[in-house]
Image (cartoon, rainbow, N blue to C red):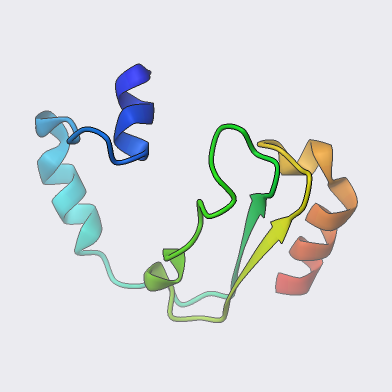
Length: 90
């Protein structure tokens, strides 16, 4: 788990045993669906910039929202904002 977080924050290289899988995933086509990325502005696990750059995975409309003062569990901590984001994509 510690290595997973270190890798997520770019502090260490990934697991060499998974390099082939990572390479194949990177070669996948972009996803053509409308997408909403939500980040909690008060998340102590991932910074509120956690979804920056994720638009590169999609060809459909992409919107990124940061919900202020919300942590890691957006559906539980900000249910109204979470539901509004779901409805906006629909």
